[in-house]
Image (cartoon, rainbow, N blue to C red; front, top):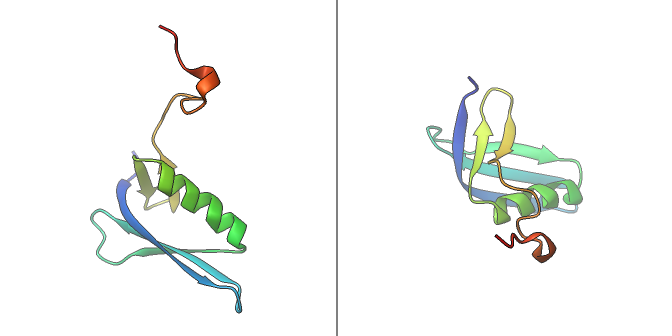
Length: 84
């Protein structure tokens, strides 16, 4: 079983001059924030968008991965709303 920890908060550090784009995550059971650097602002933006929109986000402390909880496809698309 992989050690998933709940992501509670995040912050972003942007330095366009030095092209440093860093994401900091506050996760359960870890006192210091976990940091990840990205090669471009667009890569960082994609992750921040997920963190902003999703409620159940976790961090795998072994693989160093962000995990988004399972959810149905098309759930926010009005064309795919259930008629049941």
